[in-house]
Length: 258
Image (tube, rainbow, N blue to C red):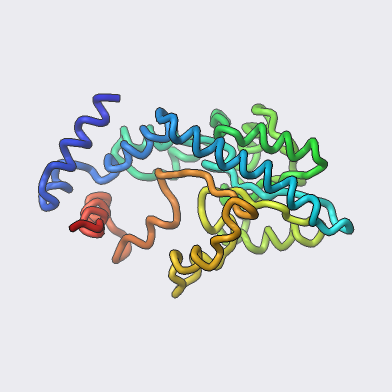
């Protein structure tokens, strides 16, 4: 990893005005990908999240409406499947996200599990709790995604339980479909919109909404660590159609410092 970390550290020592000249912008993400792939802390946080999920599931099962079935709803990417090899490939290419590369990656059905995810969902299944996989992967990714989940042995990996993005990235309509027949005991995700669309509604202050929902985290909402990407990053940028170097510049300028 020295060949990734040393250039990044060197870049952080440069004045902000020179930063975009020495870094493609996409390379900024190298340390985030390296952390997810190599740190014990990433694995520890993932295990911690799913350990809390087990405890909370047992509590919520006792309180569930007996007239409905019980389920948990999980996101897929960086919640049950680890896509850091894809992100690593993009960093090495000097891009943040190429849709063609993403299609190649998903078609391989080669993603590994997020630590703790498989064990927790098997535990839930042993309690007669079904799993619904609500993801913003699209129709083109459907077959390979199902294959990836099945290859790893995830429970309820079938057409009835996999819900991809067919109309909108807002997951609330799909959650409402599940709620018609099931108690959603827990929601697991790496992005706040995996829990409720209130967090990234226009005009909402995400940090304030998190404060209001603080009692839900660890008891109803189970958050997985993902330093590589997410809706949170969109809030950093001003303007549209920004280049990687311009995004990099804005990230540096937006940092809190003393």
